[in-house]
Length: 216
Image (cartoon, rainbow, N blue to C red; front, side):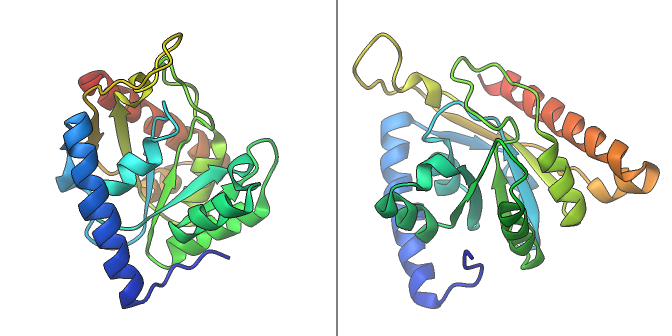
């Protein structure tokens, strides 16, 4: 299972690589703008939910997020042993998008139990055209089981780095925006578990849509 407690050496390496070198390079290449950082809790568990328009999304979001983010990634990315080791080292774990993945759910709950940031793309797949799709119920269920608030976010521009039918790399401006925290505990108090899941998913996706409209 993925580690949710890291030593000082890892912390220093992660900060230097992700929050210094990588952040510096990305800023130069894509003139990245980040807003809404005041909405990010300085401590405690949170589920970070964002739209998903490019493979590079978790890299960009993770580099500009002030805390470790434990991203769920599709299991296909973990079939290669080298890539699996790389993703695991950088706090990612696999999930089967086409079935109830109890192992992934247990890992997600452990991340939240240890007061960490769980990163999810609730649409379940990329939307390269930038259209926000319907969110999966798994996100709402995990938020209830993990008793965690949700931090909605939106990213724009990453889907323009490689554009079809061109076979070259572009350098568009990338924007990230974090929204207001969604208190899932209040929703659960007012509604039954099944209804609460639907409401949480709908509220989260609407928030992501509104954020994306502001930065796209």
